[in-house]
Amino acid sequence: MSDNIYAAPQADLTQTSDNDNEAELATRWSRLWSSLIDSLTIMAVSIPTMYFTGGFDMISEGIQPSFAYNIAIAALSISVFFIINFKSLKTQGQTIGKKTLKIKIVDLEGNLPDFNTQILKRYATYFLPGQIPVAGQFFSLINILFIFGKKKRCIHDFVAGTNVIKS
Image 1 (cartoon, rainbow, N blue to C red):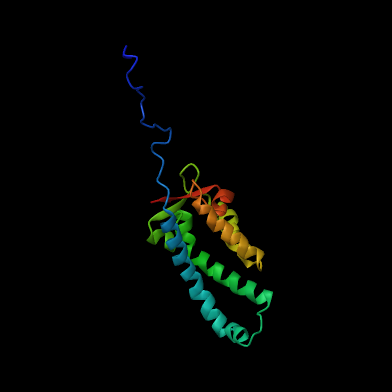
Image 2: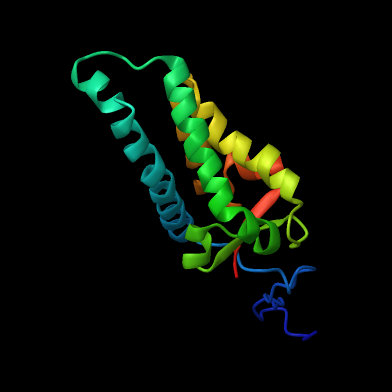
């Protein structure tokens, strides 16, 4: 310490953290684009299915498809999504979209999350509320807007205890 009482105060401004080796969180944009790529996977199933089952004909005639029809299309599409992504989610924490954007899902300790946690908590919170008319779409919007928080986590990340990081 200097004896000069008029000298500017000195402080060590370097930040140290207990988690210096912590993985870098995925960017919001990479998460958005990976989600859009995954949505294309789902649309590749749902659009042809709706076409061949007359769903578009009903809509063009002003007939609202039944709730059961909508659930069946959603269940089929989500099932195909998981069939396509099963191995990669289980072994690497990645869907096609996440693999393309070089990001992956990890638990809060940075490890690959338990597959059942991913399915039952993360993706159930992500997909199922959207099937509820009006309220589901509102929830889905709020879920997505959570990404703008400091931790860059959506509601489905908080529910499942996961993060999305750069791989």
